[in-house]
Length: 255
Image 1: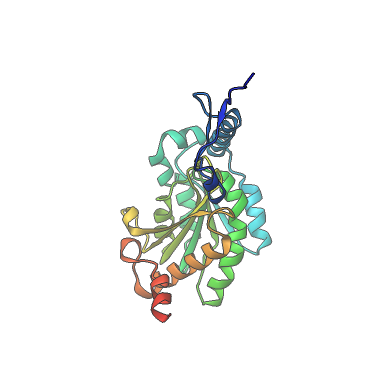
Image 2 (image 1 turned 90 degrees about the horizontal axis):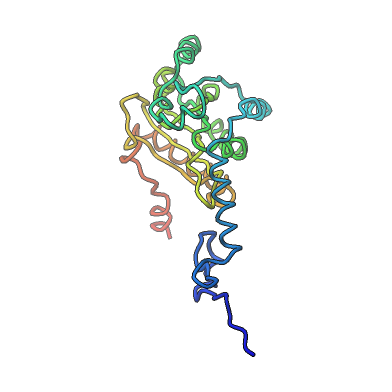
């Protein structure tokens, strides 16, 4: 008596060792295998949890304080997590109390203000921000950058960096924000940089360094890239589509 084989291995299964993407899953009869289905459901649950995770600002401020960094706590116009998810426009602007706090905080203009916000994955902020800044801040200070206290914005979207930077008269803004979770990356951190912040700016005025996490772009490489872009913004007085990372081209020319 022969036993019919139920599970069929995909011919490309060997490629799975090179990527966390869901490729070459194989099948059991007419469906994917149970283990792969359960793995997918787990990844989907983690992504949903990341989106709804509440921002632990107390822990973040404690970690930044341990680094010797002062912070200023603000909020967007979104009143809670649910409203933030339903109304992206509210996350792009500060609430009235936060604008008043900024007005009281305005002092001497500085080269840079760093804004940190939960975005769509507070888990990314909890896990990566302190590690990244511990590598980036020494580079900036050694290069003579004047930096304002770190601004933390609850329920923020990327564009809120322009309002913060404009109110504080900062030349450049670096925003660290939780990116939209994927099925293999529920805790991906994004960095958005803009020169001459203005509430009329669009995404064309920004530069982005994304997928910052140990399984993606390492802290060291992310810090080097952000440092390079910030210095180029300061030197050329531009950002966004007018500024490209040309380090690889320069290295090839030297070789």
